[in-house]
Image (tube, rainbow, N blue to C red; front, side, top):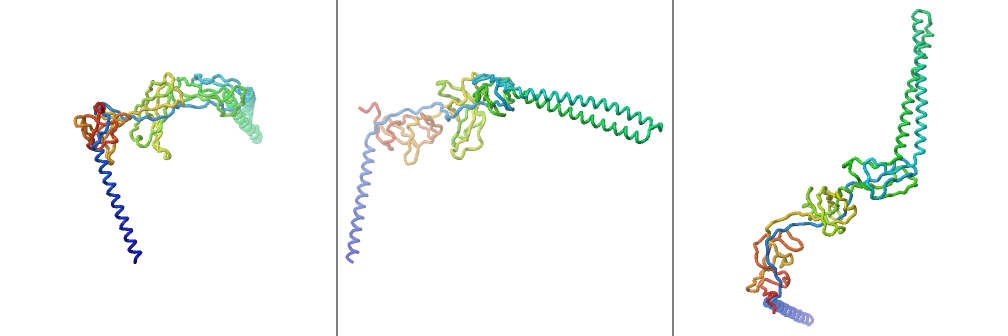
Length: 389
């Protein structure tokens, strides 16, 4: 019983102590708020203005060539000549390398000789067929007069048919040898490696980007010799985050700048937008085509793409630093320069950049606090720079 009474006394004392502490804290907060309200806060102000504003997104990426491919031989062989080097211009169907063609030349000569033999055999079969035909017609005429026997006619007819079949075989051999010759000539032509492309302007020159082998190398079929790329039109590849993805449109303009040419900008147009966002990064690939007639931009350069999403004229603008939050409400502190008071005005913002923010609602005018506003509350006294002394 004594323990219960003691426990009740202790709990009562603890409760009284907690209540006293709470009252002291509330009293201190009230006093602090009152002091803050009464204390003048030094602030800097700027006027609310009307001007144009643009919603511009800046994205980083790299330049890639409009098209790029590697020139490679279709047959194996020793690299005898390399007629181009890095940076050289090439035109369509220009010979850029020559392989040792001795083996393929010999194959062509052999195919030609075999074709001549096949043609001679075919010509001989034509002569034999003509003789067999005349013999068959002679025996047939004698048989009609009952001079030749049936067996003699059958033998002449069989001989004629045999020679006729032999001629067909000889003609087929000629065609087969012609095909072998064409294949050998085609392989011989492959020893002269050409730069060939179909898409784009066929008359436009392209340039050699990289060289992968040297003269004297033993090349295998389809082994790259040089890379050839198109520099007249480059593609800037950037990645757009999820919140900006709906703002991107095909044929939208973009302004490109690069550290290689400070102060110089280049115009581009959005050509392709990926239909999906990469799940790991929540970004979508966007390709911007950039004309490069002077070819001063090069593939691989780091670039910044500035894309204008929207713009407004005669917009109400305040410095970005003046927009603050109080109790989860966004607003600005409008300064009454006569009464030296700060009044918090909740606002709805529109386009914002690093310098200014557009105010959509309500209509505001005058001056707003840009420095020291984090210490302000509704109705706070303020000290302006010219009044500090």
